[in-house]
Image (cartoon, rainbow, N blue to C red):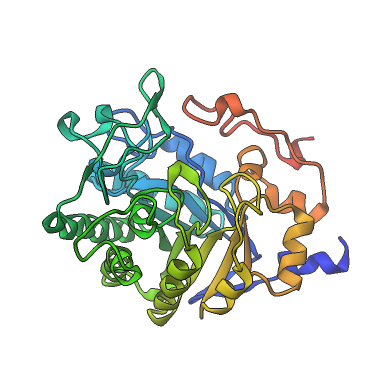
Length: 364
């Protein structure tokens, strides 16, 4: 291993946790929760156990309520069966000496009526349909037109986040990550391409930050701030969510998160799963404006990760797709070994094929 690559495998203190390396397993939707209950299964526990050598794992996004679901067969964190399922996952990861955070998720308008309670419309900051698709029983479908949350309803949604945070703690995971990225509900309040509200949750930047920070405060009422992070995607157009002046929104947001003492921000640099230079944005300045750890994400290779850490542009690097096909990604990166190629046909739904059957280096 080249000397300059050592930094990727050096320990790091995140909040009150000591991480064995700087490699984070990013949240990856795989749509393999138990049918009906939408609870993690023994198969899910094995999947995460295989990948426990990461500095820490951020679980696949997990809806905080049925209303928060946007894709078929994604796990929730709002029922007892789901808490029990996540407990099995946490136990499996801890049995390998690993750490895992649950990502708390509400998709907002990126949903379909077939997934919603009583077949109702999804909710959002405003009643504007996204130009996006989702997965439902039977395949892909355009997302449904949402209704705008009433002002009086927002407290209910914040309470759903708080309850989900409590459930995550009961499941025995090590922390939680609030999903504020990729055009989902929190992002729909942040970005003025979606948020056209005229009440105290729309219009000015201060108003558009109100709901996201209320969610953060609710979660901090349950978890120690050192065990809470937030995922952000300032310039990603994922799920048709854009803002005309993202630096004017995300710098104040990140400063507010720092003032609250969050352990980290998890930042998608560029378009989610796409080009890093999709729009101008000073990510280094964003990093410097936050007092906690900075987790960088988006198309990082081993070389780019080492370079970013050595230059001080990030504290931790999140890898997504490489973890799908490489359960021992940390070892492969350490040895600079070839990576298994992923099979996109098995990314979403199914069984062990393309999920827990990718070979490790030791199998060769």
